[in-house]
Image (cartoon, rainbow, N blue to C red; front, side, top):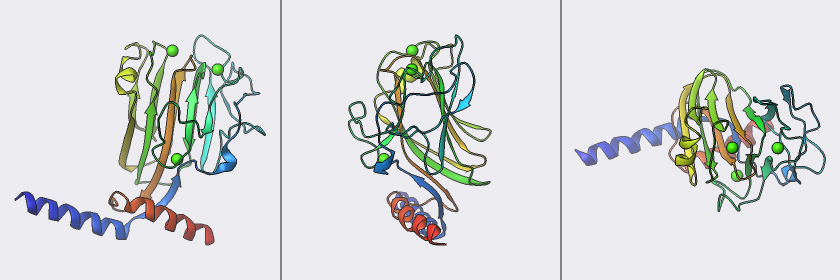
Length: 228
Ligand SMILES: [Ca+2]
Ligand SMILES: [Ca+2]
Ligand SMILES: [Ca+2]
């Protein structure tokens, strides 16, 4: 019986690999995204989309854009200079989930959000996120949604950030199927040790590819899409 189940699973995965189409893949590996500490030149008292600044780590790139929103009490946000955006600094994570670069949010003094483009209805998504191990407080939270679906909500102003502390210190791999809208990851923190790292975002339609097959599909899929 056990063998039968495993055989069935393999058959499903093999079929899935053939029929899946990768719509988006972002591992933040582009070397041009790397830069120094990011200084937001916008007004930290109001919501605004962030802009890339020359010589500083990219907060926006191919298919991803970042925003800032004040959180009561209003603070300096990212105007004081923070390590956010694409980074190759692996001191907290040990190693990135994929490759040598990822996307960081830390010391946001308010809420920073990373929004991925909308790739239509009924898509599947997977990505990895690492919460740095440290103490978290009431105003700290990590919220991840895809359209109307909440994928993860840690720390909510009630649990003193304990849920974040429990989940910290390892790469969390998150998958969601048949979701519609766009992936949005928002983080509220007020200390440089409070940080999250995001890596290996894949969005696809069709069946669920086998592990490993997705990475191969990603390279082939994106290359063919760009040639069109
Ligand atoms: Ca990466
Ligand atoms: Ca800050
Ligand atoms: Ca805090």
